[in-house]
Image 1 (cartoon, one colour):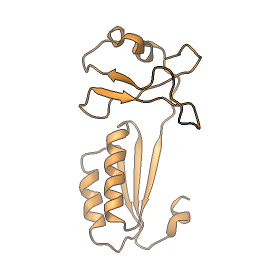
Image 2 (image 1 turned 90 degrees about the horizontal axis):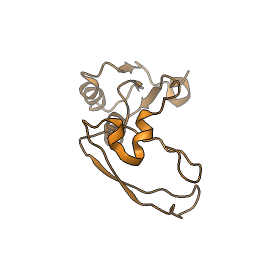
Image 3 (image 1 turned 60 degrees about the horizontal axis):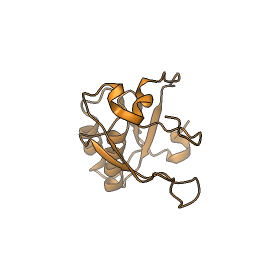
Image 4 (image 1 turned 180 degrees about the vertical axis):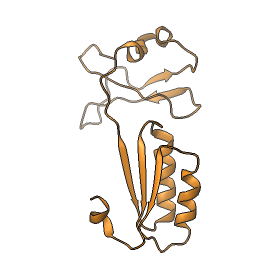
Length: 141
């Protein structure tokens, strides 16, 4: 959507069953709101683009060629942080994105079963396990 002042906004498809969102828009690097911020956005799961009112352009305008995204998450212990991270990634990431989770030989015995359970039934997610710890830098090669 192109606003009156030349800004563009792209909104993702709602990540959950929630249909109403409060959106605050700030000037970059400040705490100053745009004139009509905050604003409420309501999604209707069965709506056609014309039904989205002033946001209809977001859904009806041609989308640029989007490149495939692969997210790599190296894991070493930090059970609770990893669990929260993966829940957030699954909630806010399209199933079209590829996700590689790399268990870097975590000694915490809870890690591998938790990872296996969380990726089950997700064809876009690949779980890899290092037999020995390679460290952060070598995991990205």
